[in-house]
Length: 116
View (spheres, rainbow, N blue to C red):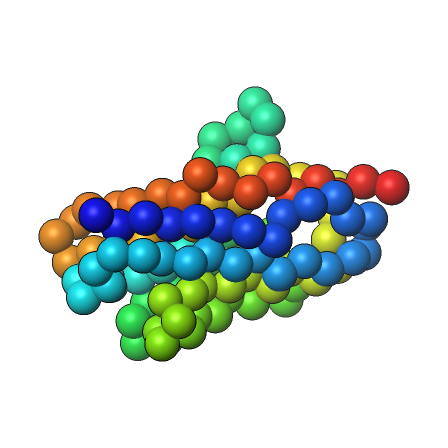
């Protein structure tokens, strides 16, 4: 059974930074990609950033240049560094993994609120 637990969310002022962390437990053998999604109130969940096993990354346009996704395979961790935070970044951020069988797994989410 694969489990994902996010941490690092909170209240931050505009222009500030956060680093979100996600620890993955269970079998990592078949994972092909890891990512971060977010869902703001009244909006659909959207992909923020994704990293493949080979290290290829992709970002949604709204965070390009402000956001870095990284992973530590030895620790079964994936991170999301977000800089220059804006009020529109406010959302629940979810960790996600994909495996070779086409299955996806989600964490419970961590709230990020950007407000002065």
